[in-house]
Image (tube, rainbow, N blue to C red; front, side, top):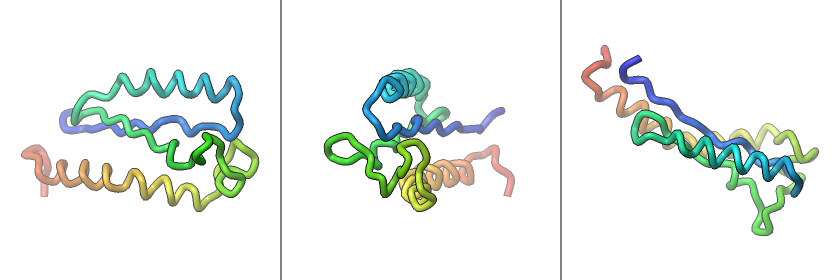
Length: 98
């Protein structure tokens, strides 16, 4: 579809240091390669939840798998500028209907 843009987010890192985290890192590295300028945008946001030592606080992810609802707000805050820019571009494109 002309004018469609895709926003790809990285897979959220699990809380523990284990093989799953390594696999997710590998998947994220592969997904990053799909970034294609203005049509497909890869946006890594999972690192915003990591502590300096690479761990994830139980405040963010109490079971080291699922994030607390307020963490979704943090994630939304990180992706909102990109979405706003994409929507602004869409409103300025000649294909858009007002």
